[in-house]
Length: 390
Image 1 (cartoon, rainbow, N blue to C red):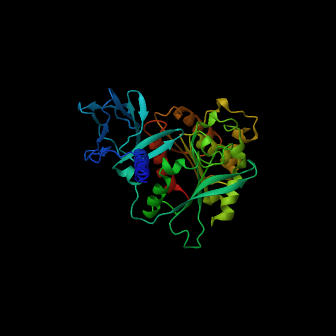
Image 2 (cartoon, rainbow, N blue to C red):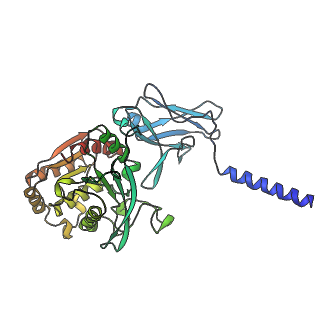
Image 3 (cartoon, rainbow, N blue to C red):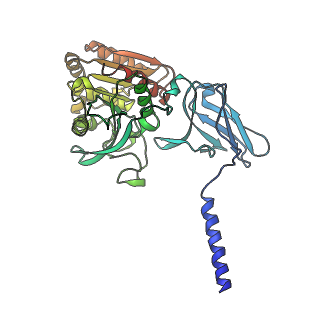
C-alpha cells in the first residue's frame, strides 16, 4: 500500500510539474519594453542560444528595425530613437524566427499576425489611454441579415450615461479594412478609448458607434463564428465571395434598421455618419452614394479606391458619377477624406477628391504623414469624430 501511495504521489507531482511548464514565467527582473523618460524605448530578451536578434516594429525611426546586442550571458538589448507619442506594435526575429515579446503580456492581432504592443506618452497617445472619466459600454451584438441568411455580429459602443437616460443619440457607423473584422477598431484603433476621452473633454458629441463585420461570407471575427478555430483570418480578397461584390454595400440598410429599432437613436440623416479605413473607405464611398438620404457625414480614411478591379455592372457600383451627383443634390454636411502622404493610395484618393468635386460634393481633406498604418487611422478618427453632428 505504501509503495502504491508513493507511486501516486510521484505521478501527481510529475503531472503538476508538467502543467506548470505550460505557464511561462519571464524572469521577474527582466522588463520589456521599457519606455524611457526621453521617449526612447528599450527592449530586453533572454535568449542564450540565439546568434542574431532584431526588433521589428511599426515606428518610423530606422524603418522600424532595431538590431539587438548580446551581453555574452544570453541577455539581448536594444534601444530605439525617441518615438512620438503613439501606440506601437512590434515582434522579435530570433535567428529568423518571428515571435512576440515573452516579457510583454500585451498583444493584439492584425489580420493573421499577433504583435506585442506598447504606448509612448504624447498628446495623441493620451487619447488612447484609460483615464478616470465616464466610460461607455461596448457590446457584441448579433443582427439577422436576410441578405446573408445568417445572424451576423457587430460591436456597439454606447456612450457613458446611455443606460441611465432616455436620450436619443446620433450614430457613427465605423468600418474596418481588408483582413479586419468587427473587433479591429477596438483593439487596433482604440476607438472606445478615443470616444470616451473626446466626449469627456467635450470635444465630440456623445454618440453611438457601430462597428460591423464587413466580410459577408463570415459572420463574426476569427474564433467567434460557428467556424470556431477552423477559420484562419486573411485579407478579404483571399476569401471567396467576399471582395468588391457589392453585397455588403447593398445590404447595409439592414444594419441601420436593426440599430434604429434596438437602440435609442436619432433616426434621421443628419444624425448618421459612415466612415471606414482602406476597404472600409471603399465601402463608405459606395454605401453613402447608393443611399444618399441615409447619411449626412461621410469619412474616407486611406480609402481603397482602386477602381481598376471593380465590376461596374454590379448594381452597387454602376453609374458612380450619377450617384455622386444625386448625393450632392441631397446634400452632405461633411465629406471628409484623410490619407497619409506616403500611403500607396494617396494619389487615388486625390483623384477621387477631384471626382467628388466635379460631382458637386465639397470635400474636407486631411494630410497625415507616413503610410497605410493604424497610426494614421487612429488620428483620422480623432479628427473626424469632433466634426460630427454639429
